[in-house]
Image 1 (cartoon, rainbow, N blue to C red):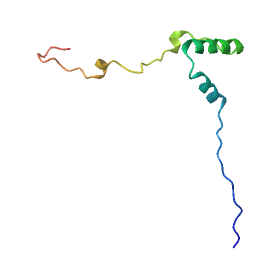
Image 2 (image 1 turned 60 degrees about the vertical axis):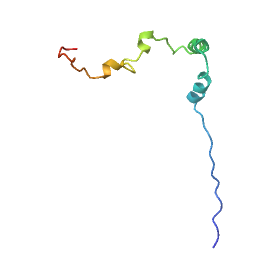
Image 3 (image 1 turned 180 degrees about the vertical axis):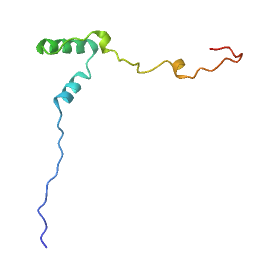
Image 4 (image 1 turned 90 degrees about the horizontal axis):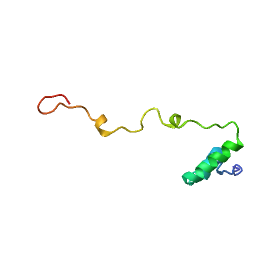
Length: 80
């Protein structure tokens, strides 16, 4: 019985342009990152600056603990 020819199998890593850009900007400090963003906005006229209030999430990512706990009546029966 003849053996089938050996097949080669391998792996390779393909990094998308977005992943490459992410790896480049991740270690940057805030001033360095601001310079990169400014440079990109000058080079790409389709980029536009957004007002800061639009950058904030609509819903808070975390809430103060007192808002998470149920409101229990006081020991003397008065409302909280």
